[in-house]
Length: 174
Image (cartoon, rainbow, N blue to C red; front, side, top):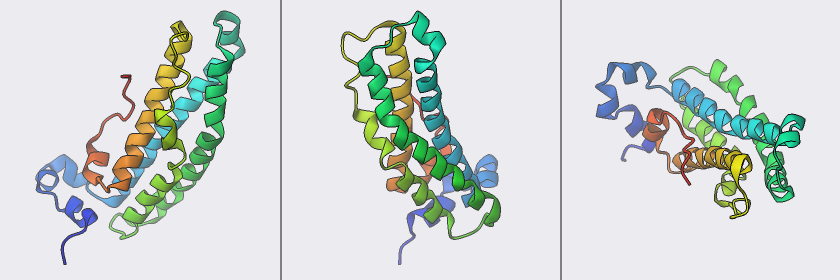
């Protein structure tokens, strides 16, 4: 029987030959990093939304109804994902670093992102009429949605090495 992706990750020579990676090469560290990166993307989106709908911004910048609707349509799924993923922190603190449960817990983070990752291709709010700060808000929000989608995709294909070495999942390209 061949090695599964988890065992291959834990025995990857590129990682095991690096002192820094040897210290980080365990399920607990990777799970914590995935939780951190995922929550960073989702909470950044929430922060951008809060800023876009804030009284201070609305007094100075005209955010269109369609852009506000674009943000609002995504918030319920994002807030639910944040709550469910935050609840997974208990496992981070309770399981031993060598537990066989880490790959299953990592998959559970992916399942909590299944609704959110679908939004990363949804660009209807970025039409030609959206300009200035309004466009910047949507661009930043989209970068965080693409980050969550990239995490989701890496989890789905069990690309543990990519999940470990990626420094920042939000990319501000179009």
